[in-house]
Image (cartoon, rainbow, N blue to C red; front, side, top):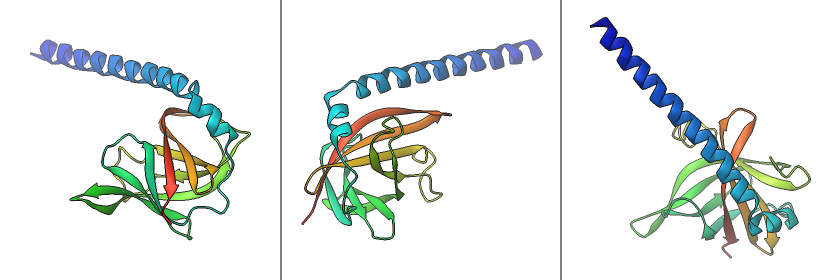
Length: 164
């Protein structure tokens, strides 16, 4: 009986190890693909949002969840994602903003949005987004996920437009 239990534990451990390895390899490949895209060139040509966005921005391109429709920025350096529920925009995930250099684009000043907040679900806390201004009231954002220490994965881009 004990041997069966050990076999079961070893099988589960091997499966989890393979799954972790596949996730890490996929993350490196996806990061390479995203950073090789045309959006990367546009992102590097962007500038620090000035003034920083305050109020509602709508998602005009990209995003990883169909219900995600934009962001609400406050002057206090915080904000929330806006999702659509029953044809209404409602606040969702909380983030904190700060001015920094890009994670991979160290020569580019960006506005970072950090989702590491106890009010957010655990799966969302490793997310860090960066935006640059690419036009008047238009921002290009990049989504990073910090799963591997010292090497966040970049999983995509999104575009926001200020609601006037």
